[in-house]
Image (cartoon, rainbow, N blue to C red; front, side):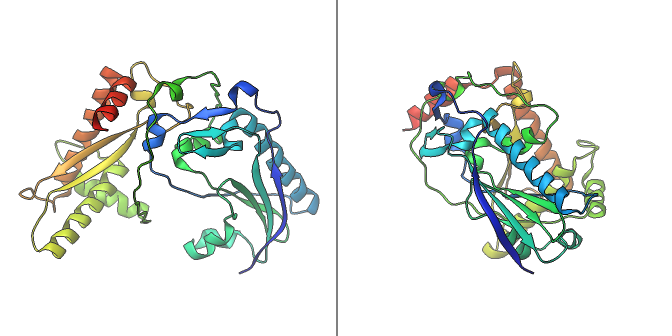
Length: 314
């Protein structure tokens, strides 16, 4: 398997960012969010395999990206400090690469080692892949402490809304950078297995668990069991879920509002509780989620409260 870059250029926004929007300050919530690079590879179906069609699709990707950067101008800037972005229209790197095999083969049996060959060199890069006949894939790395997954949702969602005059970031107390480590793992669950987990974890408390609740319960159970094996006894464990709070605040925030607008719904399993029962774990996860929804539904996004808590804590 060989992937060769055959073209590289920097794509800038189709229109320059106004001077008054050059400095974008990250709000406290964005600064608290862990920094993670999560590449996204999109595979496109095709009909015409001709060379002209390849060039046409490539140009369409470039034009769309340039126009999108105008709407979401911080993505075309550079991080100045831990709390601000200079929106200087430097743009993003666009790579065109050629593979010596049909890219559809990747989908038959995904392999992390081979997928890494699709990644551009820089975090702020877009890469179009072709095999010898067609444009097939697009890779979009994104830094989640800046946009909170907003790029994925908005670019490929049904509607785009850009609020350039929002002052949310400026209203929240800046925070010094907090060092830390984060480990990411990938688990694959097949549909039949998820359906079985849902059935085994349903109870009177939660009659129809969601797929996320079912999968989360088995992960929680496994981690708690591994900890018990290592320590020789059961320890108290906490499972924390992130919750999109945009639609759950009062009043609701726009679903297309950029930033890390999420809440944390933690739930504790004490050492004397049955951590092997998926029904118990799912019920705890559902209870924690409902509490978060109720909290933000009544109080909304308490920006001032977050700021004062951080100041008090130093």
